[in-house]
Image 1: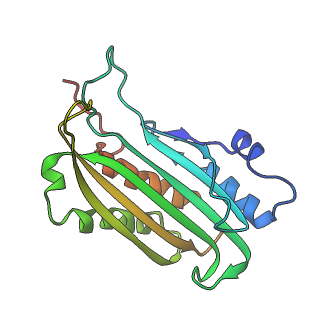
Image 2: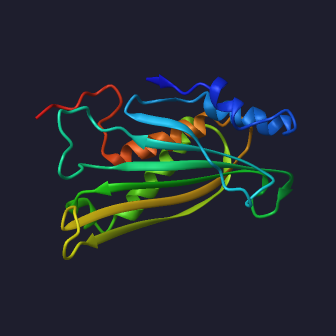
Length: 202
């Protein structure tokens, strides 16, 4: 497991002028412990969605090899955005909102499964429930797409992708479990084996 520490991340994203609750929430996000296959770090947050915002980007790392594969076997990345409004937002049912986005390449058989959207949504619901922090107003969309390349364009002829967009309102400033749940979903989408289980090398 790898710990994403908040010391260096916090110094470039928060200031004493920001509300203590917001700074506490940012620190909690950066205290998350995630799988070593997932790299997490701060990214530029949206500026106009809330008075205060912070964002983490996450990406599934490729196995180290001697060559770059001609076709990727599961690119997956995402972002988790913290929005904070001290005055509250009626649509959020609170002062804090988490907004997530995940995109992952999937194989053709999974992309063809008509139940893929329901299964992907259950990954998020189950991961949040497993980490045990209360939340409300959970909503989102799951989209499965197929892209077909024509002509002189590099890459596989067909590519299948899964996109999950969701947002929810945490009921406390303890956001560490929410980050960990988000990274669990990213791992599911990327097809990683369960934590602690090694993937057989070909």
